[in-house]
Amino acid sequence: MNAIDQLLHDVALARTRYIDAVAKLTEEQAHWKPAAEVWSAVDNTEHLYWAEHGGIWGMWRAFHAKQAGTPVWTGELVHRGLPIEEIVARTWQPKEVVPAIAAPRMGGPSAFWLSALASLQQPLTDLGHALVHEDWETLIHPHPISGPLDVRQRFEFLRFHINRHYDQVMVLGLPSHL
Image (cartoon, rainbow, N blue to C red; front, side):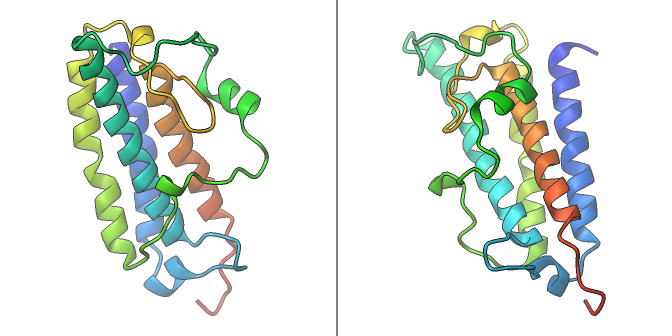
């Protein structure tokens, strides 16, 4: 398996695990929050959709901008060669504030957000195939918290981010009456 196929596989695996787990919840369970400041499973899923949608769009934008000779990032790649886990450890606070563009804001049925999240695998796969012969370190799409990330790091971030929210949903501690 080549590197891009491995990254796509890792994201797809994380996405499937997350979707399968949340799909088992009743609608009441999916909307339950143990406290006002804690996100429900639906909130987490909507956030994942918006964050991933923006990240995939940004990578496509970086790819096309590079082809046009107008890269979206020209500064120093401060995280060159680092895995996403190390980058997040260096750049994130223990409780990060979500950028407004990726914040849950609509709510609604969990099935909708799970379907929307699942739909993002195809544009990601298409992007991966378009990037097979590209130099990933020259395709930079800055992350709003971590700064400039190359495409490999961005793909790793998708997997990491889905798994992070999977863990958050799994520790919600649903009450027994739900």
